[in-house]
Amino acid sequence: MKINFIDLQAQYLAYQREIDSEVLEVFSSAQFIGGEKLNKLENSLSTYTGAKHAIGCSSGTDALLLALMALDIGAGDEVITTPFTFIATAEVIALLGAKSVFVDIQNDTYNIDPSKIENVITEKTKAIIPVSLYGQCADMDAINAIAKKHNLPVIEDACQSFGATYKGKKSCNLSTIGCTSFFPSKPLGAYGDGGAIFTNDDDLATKMRMLLNHGQNERYKHKYIGINGRLDAVQAAILNVKLKHFEKEVQAREEIGARYSDILEDSGVTTPKIREENTSVYAQYSIRVKDRDAMVAKLSAKEIPTAVHYPVPLHLQEAFANLGYKAGDFPISEAVATQIMSLPMSPYLTEAQQDYIADAIKGSECIK
Ligand SMILES: *Cc1c(COP(=O)(O)O)cnc(C)c1O
Image (tube, rainbow, N blue to C red; front, side, top):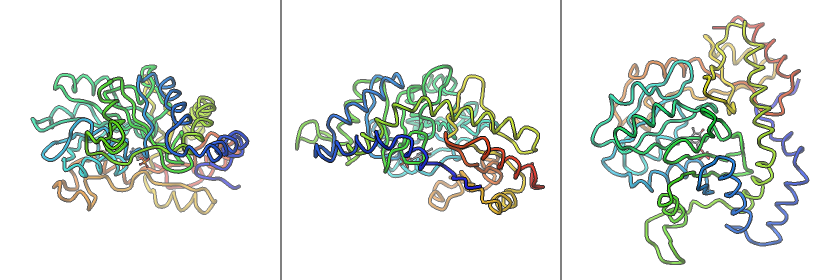
């Protein structure tokens, strides 16, 4: 049985006519940067999330970078985040000369543990970046309460959670600034790189709009040192089509995620725990197994693609050696990193494919 890890071909075939026509309109208009397609996308993103400002940008990484730049974070500052995430979350902190201060994750959601945040706050702390991993939001009320007490901004790394909800509110609109990614394999993916920044703060929105366009407030008048962080019109045009169909896909993702957990219930693997206040978009459907190498090999022999998000926590990465952490500092992140693996996931995964995957998992001895 042919199974794609993420079925972008099936999705393109479903919307091909609309996508082709939107993209051709950009080509014939010759408006490649900014313009009507981007304005329309930003308005729709704002309506969808409920955030007052939605700003298209070049990637999820740049969204995070722009958020930190807007908050004037730089040399000597500390930013609290999780070591169990994609490197971009902490990379942007280092790029600005600031220091990542890691806090271990919860054993059930794999998100930052709010009860451990206050211990590491110092007078150098300038922000907290929770990551909504695999499509499920962190405990944002608890995090926001700590942040408020210490007068700190919170940046949600929502690169995997666009479309998810926390207590009925949309991810990206849960804190000072929300950052998402439109990398092709994310829940809402473009056909190249892209991202967006969300905020309800008018001043931050104005500043981030300038920063992503070389700090310009008018042409060739530069108020800040910025970057080229713009989202192009072709990507905006594609995202306009995909966003129109997105809620239906979110629903399919939720159903497919829940069905996976159902059919794997007695299999011995640990399935994702989605907390009651959350809905997940299952950017990844990730399970925990005792012998991951054996399980990956077993599934691969049956032509079932898998991936590992993420095999090495950030505090053990060579690039962050200068932070001075060592093995044993974040035991939950380290344990999860050795056991976690992601199964094929997309709104186009069929029940027959899911049953085939579940049977392959159950028929293997490398469980739990
Ligand atoms: C994908 C991702 C990013 C980076 O997004 P890009 O668009 O690839 O730059 C950042 N953080 C997390 C958690 C991600 O999954």
